[in-house]
Amino acid sequence: MAGFSYQTVWRLAGPNIISNVLMVSISFAHLWIAAPFGREMSAAVVAGGRVHFLLMAAAMALSVATTAVVARAWGADNIEEASASTTTSLVLAIFLSLTLGGITYLAAPSIASMFNLDRKTAAFAVAYIQPASLLNIVFALMMTIATAFRAIGDVIRPLWYTAIGASISIVASYVLVNGSVGLPSLGIAGIPWGTAVGQVAIVLWFSLHWLLKRYVLQPHLKGALARSRVKQITKIGAPAAIEQILIQMSFLLFMMLVSGYGTAAFTAYGIGITILSITIVVGLGFGTASATLSGQRLGARDHDGAIASGWAAMRLAILGMTALAVITFSLRTPLAAMLSNDPAVRAHTEYFILILSLIQPLMAIEFAIGGALRGAGDTRYPLFVTFAGMILGRLSVGFAVQAIGWPVEAMYAVIIGDYAIKAGLLILRYRRIDWREIEDHPHAPIAIQSVAGISRGPVRTFFSRRNLPGND
Image (cartoon, rainbow, N blue to C red):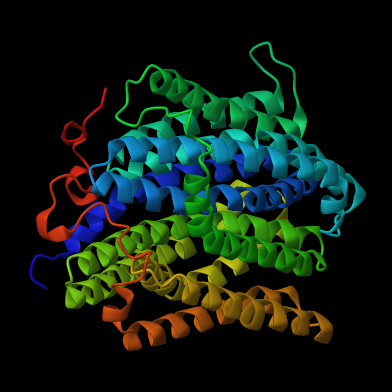
């Protein structure tokens, strides 16, 4: 693998992993803040958080398109187009979040009732979902901002934004839930409001410097809604949006199945998923690195290097996620105790952590190989794989477990089949794919520039801000 090393993968993955872990720390903090108030409030945070993740799917899909169009323009030395595309993405983020947020706010009572929660827990869930749905606009803007900077190779600035925003969000959520420093207690509604405080601080800071043109990416308000630009972003983001919606809807349906086993089992599932999110963001970091290297190698017509980079990312992902699984399993008891005061919830959580530990190698394959395929321009097959795993491996078997009347432990174990199916299908595809056909796919040139002659790409600038113009 001339010109390629595992260090290259890590330098791409590392900063994004750190940023993602910081974001996940907010979800951990939410459960920690809610734990003293009982299982009802913890369950409401779980349900409300899942609905918020569904809202976030639109922003995540938009970030895929933002990465593609901004990175392509930057790679072509067209800074003006990169700036214009960033502006368009920000406008679309506002439109999408306001539209979906308004609908979710009005439908919050009906959505909460879908989880089969008791009356008190459902009331808590509505109190969480309604402000979270309106405040999602701040998250959408923050994600779009961070994505645009990463697309031009500046991953340090988003890391700082995330660190500062997460710190403020956690402190503000605690203060607003409990009421202190002269502020009233908002109860569970204080969690989304507090989270928004940290994100608003970052968005305002960016907006001030952006409007004053202190960044290399500058505002282009006149052409923000140019039809061709909006169409391009929409076309690229559509498959990602479908996949995200499918994932989040499947999670919602599976949570509803788990809710049939009672509040304790439901809360434990939510806590387990929050714990799982730590390893997920590690996988996402390797997936991003895999996609970048795959696209760059194909852009340089280095087919063997493209394939090798995917396998290397997969090996590192398996190593890293397996190590985290061992650590998580060994700490299952203190983790369960930290995130819940209820003995029944703790017992369910410890068992669920066992299941989560078993699926880590399979998830590593999904992230790394799926990322390599997307980086090469093959976006439809990962969508098919997601559908197959969710429908055949998770929901179909889950409904069967419920119909037979098996215990909640069997329902938790269902997710093993989901990830086994996805890992198997992805490896099968990766072994048989014709990379020379993908090379000409219109989505393939997503890399900032080829690895063969990096002068301003992400591999070089991960830890060096001075390599980028416009840094302040």
